[in-house]
Image (cartoon, rainbow, N blue to C red):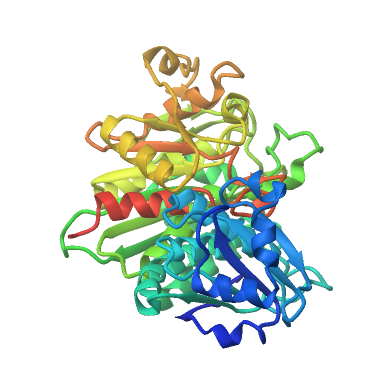
Amino acid sequence: MSHPVAIHFRETDLEALSATTGRIALFAEPGARLSAGARRLDRMMRGAIGRALASEAAAKLKPGESIELAWPAALAAEAVQIIRLPRRASVADARKAGAAVGRSLGASGALVLAEGHARAAEISLGLALRAYDFAPHKTDAAPQPGAVSFMVTDPEAVASAARPMAALAEGVFFTRDLVNEPANILTTDDFAARLAAMQELGLDVEILEEPDLAKLGMGALLGVGQGSESPSKVVVMRWQGGTKDEPPFALVGKGVVFDTGGISIKPAAGMEEMTMDMGGAGVVAGVMRTLALRKAQANVVGVVGLVENMPDGRAQRPGDVVRSMKGDTIEVINTDAEGRLVLADVLWYTQERFAPVAMINLATLTGAIIVALGHENAGVFSNNDALANNFLRAAEAEGEGAWRMPMGAAYDAMLKSRVADMRNSVGRPAGSITAAQFLARFVKPETPWAHLDIAGVALLSTDSTLAPKGATGWGVMALDRLIRDQFETR
C-alpha cells in the first residue's frame, strides 16, 4: 500500500540550510517578523525573501498559498517556497499550508522551517496527505517523494502531537488505495485478504463466506452478488481498546467492488468510475486501521459487505423478491439500487450480534445526493439528533463537508410494494432520501444510527486541497475525531 512520506522533526540547524537539496519551505506573514531560520536564509539570499514578501504577489496570497523562488543563489536547494501563514493559524489553514509543500514535493525531499509554529504537527499532516500518489500500475511512475525534515523549536513535543496524525494519514492512504484500485485487482477475495492482513496491527478480523451468509439468512446481500464469479463476503473487524465488556460503536460499509448496475445496466459512459462503489467499506477499513495504529481507547467494530454486481444468466432480475436477514421481503424494482440491499443485511447482522451503542453506515449509495449536494458535502441522514450533530461537528472540525438531509413518514410510505413488504427503489424523486428510509427499516428503534451517502465526495475528478484527483479518503478523519471525542475511554 501507499505510505505517507517520511517526516522527521529536529531542532533548527542553520548550517544545514546552505547544503539542503530539494526545496526549502518557510511560513511567513507579510509585515510580520521572520523566524530565525528564515532571517538567516534571507541573508544568504541577499534579501530575496524580504523583497518577495513585500511584493504585490505576496500581498494577494491567501493563508496557505505560496510563491516560489527557483534555484536561489548561494543555496543547493532547487527552490525556496514562501507560504503565507500566521504563527497562530487555524487548523484548516495549517493543513493547507502543508499541502502546498506536499503538492510540490519531489524525490529530493524538503526542509521545512516551522520554528515556534503552533500548528507544526497539523502542517505535517497536510503535507503528508497531499503528497499521496497512486501509481502501482504505472510502468514509468515518478520517483517516490523524498523525506521531509521539519525544523521546530521543540521536536519531541511536535513529534508527540504528530504521532496520532501519522496513524490518521495511513488510514486515509489505505482508504484511497482501496478506492483507486481497479476491480480486476480489488476483487472481493483480494479486498477481504487486505482486511485480514490488518490482524498484524491487533485487529480481530473474521471473514464470513457465502455458506455462512446463507445460513444467517442474508438473502438481500446474496441476491446482489449472485451474477458474479467473485464470491460475496462479509468481513468483521474488531478493535477492543476500551473497557472489556462495554458495547462497541459500529461502522458499517457498502463494499460493491464493481457496479455494472446488474440487469438494470448502467450507461457505458463513466462506468469505469464504478470501481469506487466500495468506497463506504474503504472508509470503514481506513478508520479501523487508524484506530489500531494509534491504539485508540475505544471498542469499535467495522463490518463491511463485499459483493460485485454483474449481469449474468444467474443474476438478480427486476421483479425478483428476496428475503432479508431481518425477515422482511423486498421487491427488487431496480438491480442498480443494490447497495441498500447489501447494507440491509449487514446493518441487521451488526445489531443482532454486537448490540452497538451507536452505528454509522457509509455508502456511495445514490447519484441523487450528487444532484442535491454536488461534490462538496456528503449527505447525513439520522434517527438521532445527538449522533448527527456530533458527527457534523467532527466533520466540520476536520474540514470534511457534510450536510444533514431530511427523513420522514411521507418518504417512507413511498417504499410500499404491491407484492412484498417493501420495494428497493421508487424512482427519481427524493432518491437519496428514500434510500435512507429503506435503510432505516433495518435499524432497531433503540439504536442511534446515521447513514452517510458519500457518492459525491469519495472520488473527485479534480485536485482538492488535501488530495490529488481520484480517491479522497473522505470520512476517515471525521469518524476518527468522532470516536476520539465521543467513544474513547478517558
